[in-house]
Image 1 (cartoon, rainbow, N blue to C red):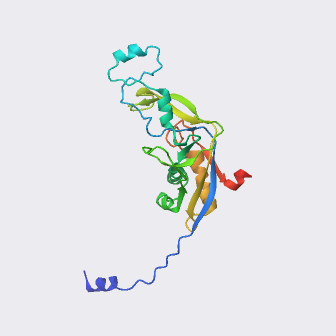
Image 2: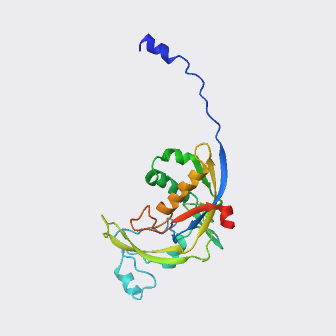
Length: 237
């Protein structure tokens, strides 16, 4: 290193001014535009190619004797495991679902928004903890839904395929909420993102990305889990 370069590297560059973080909070509500289909990470695909007869199959005894590797499916048990339970009177949804949707929108839908900056610019505050200690998404927001308990959704997914329409069919039994809403508190840095821009971003996330299963983000023909966001005070009014 030359003496000239070394000299320059030791010269003071002046004072760096960093403004204080300006945290603000707002109460919002996500209002479902499409049904919400959930899967709590326990109702997963079984071994690829494995037979999955249901327990109420009329030929259950024959299937049991012929299928050594197959596991009998209990639709009711799968349905119960798919739910995010808060208590006996209410279910929830993981709080991080909403932030995840916003990050998707920032990265994919809305041009000019830095995903790395958005990650630290706002937080969705969880309000409840699941009563299941093994729950892999324990921090929840309460779902408000006129139908409780939720309906059992029955559909078949394909697993192990290498393209659309390929793979072995795998029956799933999950909870679905035809109508739903969810209130939550957002804590955000107002000197990094303004409230109108945050609301716009949340609405892009809700209408274009969605949350939970069969949402537009994850499924080419998915439309479930879509929502729009309004201020809680406007919703109450």
